[in-house]
Length: 138
Image (cartoon, rainbow, N blue to C red; front, side, top):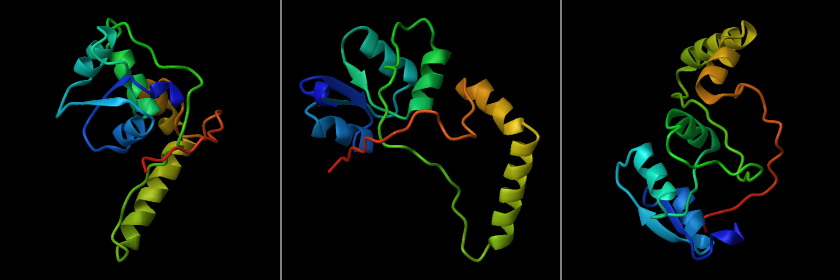
């Protein structure tokens, strides 16, 4: 993270990733509603130096745009991420149906298949990498 000092970090304004980049001394280069190819092309052409973002989102972007010569740094992980669903507390029946559907999809291998198709790895299981570094935007 200390290597960010003086670098140009690309991203959407006011996101936690941009706040982290700025906290570590990067100069923010912000975009509004930019496409992934614009972000990646700017890094490839040296207009920016780095994009801090969700690992799986970046992995999908790089895979979808193989002609843009950029790469994801291996073994650089921070801030473990967890995604979930929000339900109205009164709607426990819907929550149960979603949980049952997810359990069924996991059991029959559909979650693994979809994960590998879209993310190139099985995101339905805990990652092998242990993420111990927590960085904050504050």
